[in-house]
Image 1 (cartoon, rainbow, N blue to C red):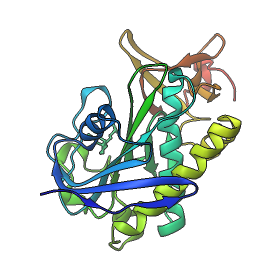
Image 2: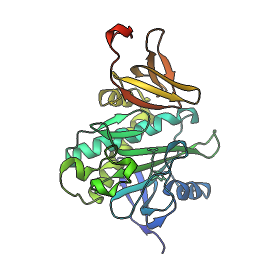
Image 3: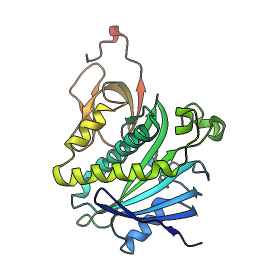
Image 4: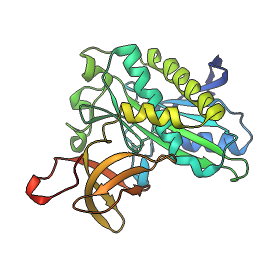
Length: 269
Ligand code: BTN
């Protein structure tokens, strides 16, 4: 079936919203449209993804009827190396929208999650497309809206949540989509005009990571430290346990850890 085209304008960004019943992955479909010259603001939304993707090659469960699975095409006039910032921008937009619409006290977990009391509510997959000189960014957003506990695969139970589980009632998914697009557009315009400093302040303020002890899992191994802030390029600054200056962490999994006992002599807050 051809997609439904529900286009509109939000905060100066013209959105062209293409709605599908089913796709393998909205990021993959939008990448193809981007290659064919789709304009900035193209949004691909699917009720069901059969091969939804997460970071680091993981799959993303995207069953029909319960979530918002969509991707937004941006064509920023800024260098491609700022890619990690786009995921934080989208996470901040989702956090603000679920708070505004449903009163959910969500936080941003570096680098690409929105969490409620530590459980994952949304994940962002920001991918670069096109040449570095004329970058395109595909911002994929997966937001759990109406799942109940038993709807999550067993390995995610207790670690994933939904807007419904957070507020105790189901919510029409479309009430969240346009506020997310509006919050995304506001932050995008602001970043293009004046840089990412206000976004980084917002993310730090609503962070589930900064100020916490974390385990950093990299290809070379796992180490622990205190997350002390965000670098201007969106990296997480972590002071390793015991010694040393803060290290900028880019490509890693980060999980929250309890503070070490004082006897172990970690860095002080
Ligand atoms: C993660 O947490 O690792 C990121 C998950 C991103 C999932 C979204 S759903 C819409 C878009 N299409 C995909 O295939 N992935 C993203």
